[in-house]
Image (tube, rainbow, N blue to C red; front, side, top):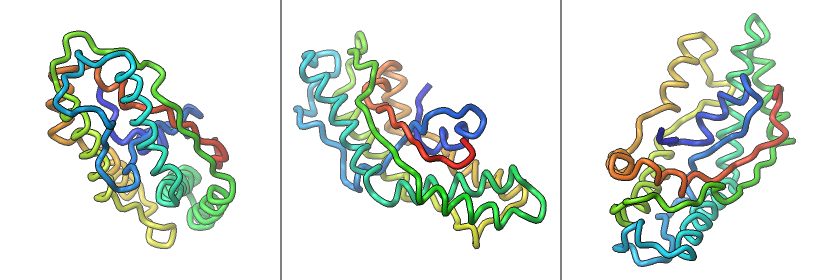
Length: 199
């Protein structure tokens, strides 16, 4: 299954399973480019080129994780979810304290994909893969997680927020996955977060 918005989805899972924040990112805002000839088909990549693709996808994610945008996004989402789980009259204070603690303690590291294996028979090009990841990054800009002061703490408000965070894949990714279902392993870096309040 295609894991778009890796960190978005796992922020929510984190509360239930104390898992990782496995993330999509905006890669610092630019287009993803592995540095390899884009017209080359994925099944024609050498072992060295394949590793370069995996490593460069991690670098792309890492550049975003290093920015304040990732931390702000994650901490706002975590704070709102924690507040709604707490319920009652303390939701605003819970949201604020959780957010403050998250911003103080939050740390994230990015590792290259652990399953960097060439998909068999994948005739999609590297340009196709790079476009998919670039489109994922661009779509991040459409997400707007409110601050605690702006948040709607009702069940419907949380439902609306989760619906926004779980938007569908860009068309380029849908097409790529239909041609090469296993190709997602090449651009799914492992993003581990610590210092998450309530985790």
